[in-house]
Image (cartoon, rainbow, N blue to C red; front, top):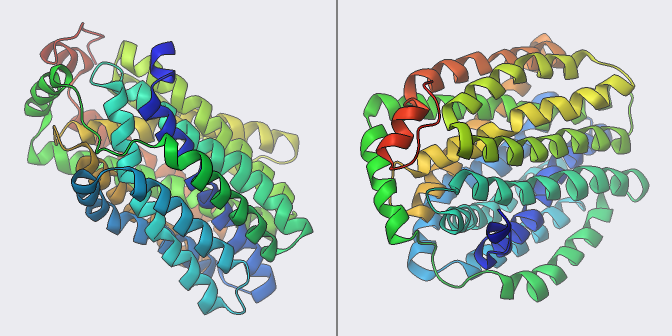
Length: 401
């Protein structure tokens, strides 16, 4: 683990993810704040976040291909710079059309960054520590989203208004050009020959059309549930009369719990088995999510940490499972997996907004929590047992599930 944390490729990718996902945390706060100033419906609030996520997701396979051809650095740095510029401009939006156009275009930067970042994280960990390495990478993004995006972003908009985001945008530009640019590797991510051989054996074992479709189903439903929570919890609390600082802090705790749970769960999965950890954490995420929705006061903040923690490992572990299906093409596989996740999440987010305008936001979020039952069923059928996967990959068996 110590050697992994000193890996230059992983550290550069993680720093970039921290900077990039600041804006993933700010956009829901921005849209919730704008809903008060511009008098927006739930569907209109969701559209801004939906455009950001869907444009990011649709372009990630394309940028993954370009990364393998031209290298990592400028897609990583350029993605951070572009997203920072667009969200900073969104803070000055004179109307709703300008707002959703700017947030939508910001998704191009996210699309450029994530394939190279996820691929570099996988290359740093190899086959044996891939889940742990990916979790460290996602930890960087989640901390940026939670601590700076949601928490600091909420404070900025409470005291400086939407235009205060421009100050944060300028700061991110400085860090990206002076610290991130030399930290990111210039070459495309590649996995070692030894790990690639093991990866190929895993890939031959797991790839089937049924398995692929069920894995995509698990990723889609999990992403829909997660995106609805992060996209609409600020709006739910805003409707209840809370300030941007308060619902920003709640979202920050949820994301911080997700970061902690993601690293811990992925480390355990590398030791004891991926399928077992996925099924257990997703099963726990259902009651934890319902607790968060209906809790009040202090207990709402406690529930936010718990719900985030038990839901955190699934994203990392599902992306790693998808990467194994396309051995030797880490950036492309990462772009396809992350892209599908983003698109599915954005579609679910928009649909949840439409439903919420008819049936109420709290009832809708309750339904999106229960959608995780579909994720559990898909994973149970799609993924091989941990014992079978580890044996055929050349590792030690980790269980029978």
